[in-house]
Every structure is written in C-alpha cells, then in structure tokens.
Amino acid sequence: MDQQIELFRDDYTLTERRSARARNIRIEVRPDRSVTLIYPHWVARSEALAFFHSREAWVRSKLVELAQHRAAHPQPARLRWDGADQIRLRGRELPLKLEPARLRRAAVRFEADRIVVLAPATDTPARLDAALRQALLQQARLDARAHLDAAAAPLGVVYRELRINDPQTQWGSCNPGAVICLSWRLVMAPPEVFRYVAVHELCHLVHMDHSSRFWALVERQMPDFEQHKRWLRDRGHQLQGWLSRR
Image (cartoon, rainbow, N blue to C red):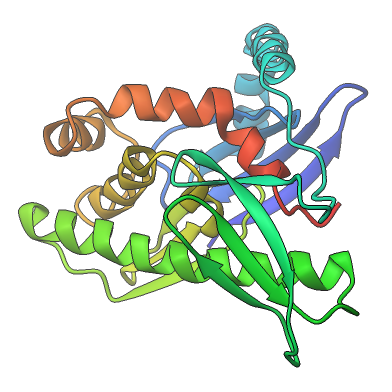
C-alpha cells in the first residue's frame, strides 16, 4: 500500500511514496513544482533520501525545463460564460455557447463544431462549470471504455473496473485488482494521447512496474507512444487549467 509524506522546500514540494508496486527508486517531477520520490517497500527511507539528494541537481534542472514549457503554453483562463469562451475537446478548441432554457438544471449538448450549455438564467458560473465538468466526465468515460476495450484484446488482458476521476498528480493508475482509474481531463487531449494512457495502464496488468520489459510492451502496442508521452509532459498542465476548482 502506498504511503505518502510531504516535505516542503522553498521552491518545490517533495512527496515521498513507499509503493508495493515499485521495483526501484525513481523521481517524478511535474510542472506544478511537485516532486515525488517513489521507492519499494523493502528500501530503507534513508537509502531513498540519499538517492534523492544525489539527484537533486537534476531535479532542479528539470523544474527549470518544465517551467519554460509551462511559460510557452500557459494555462487557460477561467470560463467567463459571456459567449466568447472556448474549451478543448478531443484535441480541438470548440466554441462554448450558453443558451437560456426553462430547465431545473443545466444540460450540455455536444455538437460537431461547438458545445452548447442550456441552463436557467439564474445559474451561477460555478453551477455552469460543474454541469460542464460532469458532461465532459461522461464523454471521457465513453472514450476511455473504447480505448481500453480496443487495446485489451491484443494484450490478452481483462480489466475488472474503470473509474473516471480528477487526480492532480497522475493521468491514470492500475491496481493489482485490475481496477483502472483515468483522469476525465484526458478527453480534452488529442485522442491518441488518451489512447496512450489507456494502453499504458493496461500494460501494467502484465508488468506491474516501469521496468524495461514494461516499456517494451507499451512500444509493441503503440510504437509512437513517446510523442504522446511528451505531449502530456509539455502540455498536460494546460488540461489541469480547464474547469479547475482553484
């Protein structure tokens, strides 16, 4: 079972995670300046921290690199609900139109070239955001199911359950019980990026680690996976900006 401890630095937050799935010590650095030290349950904490300190210069250089990417691709602003908004769906930015309707609660309609939200005139921006977020979550569930079902058969695996949620630090996860969790925000990314995350998590049903065997399996299923992995590294923070609860 994962165990997390947060340690705060002046310029980043370090989270330690002792993981039953990990096979070696690794460090994950994210654009929000969060850094995660992950190590197997059989590794002493002192050893893991020593490893981290030996790589701290790399961590800081990675934070600078990610900050540069973030500056080049800033997060979107809050939705204004003034008729001029756009929102991303499956890699495209579509106009978001608000239409008054005599309804008890907002309803969302996805059209080929726009997204329409029908809502009572009294609805607040927060309620409109919530309605749109829920509708996008349902679209994400449909896409996730399609990607997983298409990729599971060639791998010869069966997942037990799909959960769609809104994690802040990972795009997907797969536990030993074959439960796959995916971020609803992936529905805003290009479809091949969403497919990469689905394939990635399914491959964990064969190799429950990030070993060379795991990555070789991902590559066999999706030879161009590296470009989609890079897209998430460079642009994924933008997806976190849409409909955030900040």
